Structures are given as structure tokens and as C-alpha cells.
Length: 354
Image (cartoon, rainbow, N blue to C red; front, side, top):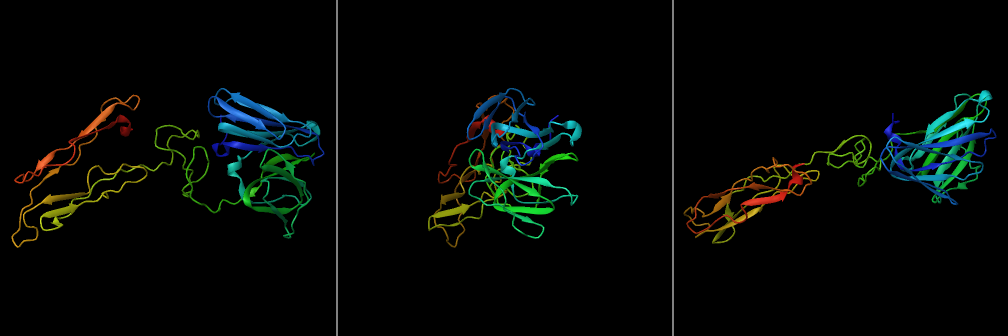
């Protein structure tokens, strides 16, 4: 069974805490959701490439001794779990499991408090080089006692000892975890963050896990009948496209002494969400004898009927088969030889039926 999809991504930072004196091992478990997922595990001094052949398979590796922070990247979304096991399990608080958040899901502000004033914990911050993170205690005093350990650029990791209530903020998104290993309890989790964050619209990219249109949902799919962003849903939250249709023609009016013109607009309805533009012309001009004379003159013209529906009954295997639609030339008056302008038929690939 897969774990919640909210924590899937393509870039993660894993780390080991060096200020905790308890001896422990740290395992990183990578879960794939797509066949042939290629994973790279990168530090400043090493590069390991792994291929996970099947969706649902896993790969694990351990951080040893003084290993520096590692960056995990992949070509398809993955999930990464960090498992902490104290060596002396009989005398410590057991095994701690925590999902790592992908770097594109980091936030700008975190807050937390410890349930027992006598307890202590370690806060781990993962930030980009060049950006500052302000850490404040419950008295709004700045805490800056840490040494940053560099990982794969641009990321670095710092540790803080915490006792009560704290908050951390930055102008750049950063990761923040709280953990502890001692005889009473072993745990690790993300620090608390606010969901009421500022949202700016952006262009959707596959698997970016971003609410691109700020509607509270992740809008990554395109309408193609496939799970394009590998989150187990097909075309979720895709707004249905609407093709543009012509309005009725406006009344004829004089363009000059010998020509009348009329117009229509592609707004009944307007195209939306990648729909097709109206086919044909938005303006027609015809010849008349005396436009604007006292005597009402009947214009001489022929007009096209509406297009028929596309013939989507033909099997469409690879999207290259051609289908057509037709329209008729309705003759109103041809005394002056005025006929319909344009083609009677329209041919397109059958992929537009999907």
C-alpha cells in the first residue's frame, strides 16, 4: 500500500544529526510510484545512481558516521522515509519513522512547542546557501547558535537545541524537522506550519505539487486521459475546455455607397481552458447598387450554414486518422453572382475527438 501522495516529489534532502550523543543508525527508504524510476543520491563527495524497476518497489541506504547531508533526486515522483533506530533498543524509545518532504514543499514559517517543559529536542533546518533563517524562542529572542553543514549545493543543514516554544522564518522556503532520541521517547517529524500562505499563480509543470491557480487544489494535469503527474488520479481538477462558437450575425450596414457589411463574434460561448477558436470569418461584405438610398435595396449574397459535428465514429488508434465536418452554402439571392466564399468541408486529425 502506498503512503499519502502529498509527500511525493523529485528532490529531497536527507541528513544525520551529529549533536545527539545516543548512537543510532539512520536508514533512508525510497518508494517508487512509476516503473523504471532513476534515482541519484548526491553529496559534495559522492554520486550514486540507482534504478528502481517496478512501481511500488523500494531502495534503501544508510547514512554512516560523519556522512554529510545527501540530496536525493529522481526522474519520476518518489517518496522518502527516514528511519531512526537506536542501537540499544531495549533501553531507548524505539524506532522513529518520518516522511521527508520534497524541497518544493518547504515553507517560509514554522512553529512548535514541546509538551513537557522538562524535555528537550533537536531542531534541524535545511536552507539554501545565502538565505538567512531567523529562529526565535518564546521570549522573541534570536537563537543563532549553530554550525551549518554543507550538502549538495545549494542546500545546507543546521541544528538547534530547543526547550520550549520556538518559531523559524525566512524569505526563502526551507525545511524544518524536530526530533529526539533518548530513554523516554524517540521521534522525528516536520515542525508545524501555517496553511494560510500567500499564493501566486504560476505555470503548471508535471509533478510540481503546486497550487498553480490558487484555488486550494493542485492543478497539474492536462486533459489527455492519463495520469500525467503520477499521483494515481487521471485528469483530476482539470477544467473542461470550451470551444468558441459564433454569435448571430449583426444587421447589415453600409460600409460605403456600394458595399454593405455585417459582423459576428466568437463569444457564444467564448473559448475557455484551451478550447478551439471559431472557424470561418467574423466579417462579411457584399456588393449592392445604392447603399443608403431611400428605397430599401435587397442585398445579393449567399451564406454558409453552421458546421456539422465532427465525425467521431471512425476508430482513432494513433491520432493520425482524418475526420471531417461539412457545411452547406445557403443561396439567398445570386442575381449579382455572389456565392459563398471558403471551403465546404474541413478535415482534421481524429485526436480532436478525445
